[in-house]
Image 1 (tube, rainbow, N blue to C red):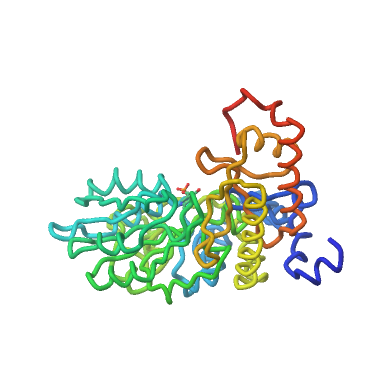
Image 2 (image 1 turned 30 degrees about the vertical axis):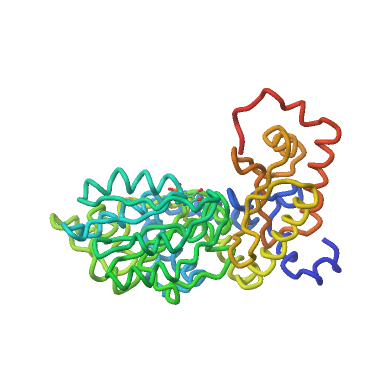
Length: 403
Ligand SMILES: Cc1ncc(COP(=O)(O)O)c(C=O)c1O
């Protein structure tokens, strides 16, 4: 990066901390964020501790990591220390939430949307009924990509025990206006769980201002923390009065007493279960730290500017855009249909222009705080060339695997 480029966009100074950016045009942080160079050292620290002190590593560092690492992520969502537990994935966090809610006759409904991440739908629809819940799914708006928040509000009734919806939709990056939905849930006495996988790390999120009871997400994508590091925030007052039946010894006040009876710990500890995935927790430290240093206001401002630029580039070529045009309602990803989209995506990957492709959405491009404007221009110019030269034909008939 030149000094001029960095002075025009100070976030570009962070590029040097992510080696893959020097080797590729990396535009896929909506799927897997780039690895910080410092994470290599963190993983080495993990191996060194295991090698050097063996089982004593649990007491020295490992046992408390699900809450310590959660404390590092908590400020990125405005959460207090001790309220965020690291959980292996969001599906497990969702199961944990469901297992804590007393579904009773007359207060047994879960409201979701048809555009939530399928895995959370699978868990809720399979597990919910076993806890005595029934699930109402609010269908997408007519465009198939956004939600009509008014319909969500209407679906919440005195029977609703839990509203479990996405903050930003994974398919279209549509930012759901959750404020009226949360207000309605509070009015009827229902709890709210937000899946914030596509908001925490790419835009400011404040659980206290939002007033949500649970918030889930992961470090895999926008937080550059790798797989296995998902998080579950539970509002302190809610945590104090609920006890997840999906539990384990890490949630016990005295796990090493190996007592016969469960005695739930307080705060984030209460939401843990069994042995934590320690290497994933080491990997989860540096990305959130760097994101906090870069600052979410600045990251969001840049994301809005760069996604708007992508839409303009796609419009200029007549590609159909699958992303909200209103800046305030658009998350970090822009998808657009180009002719022969699957094959073009493969040709881009072969050139180390790293994007992904989804049937129905097209080529998905996700700039992040470390992305230069020039990379966006380069990616779209590469598409032009791949189409103009027929390079995409090399990949015709090879459908199957995609990133
Ligand atoms: C909105 C959303 N929720 C959840 C997940 C992942 O769920 P899990 O952590 O259970 O794999 C994703 C991953 O793509 C997602 O986009």
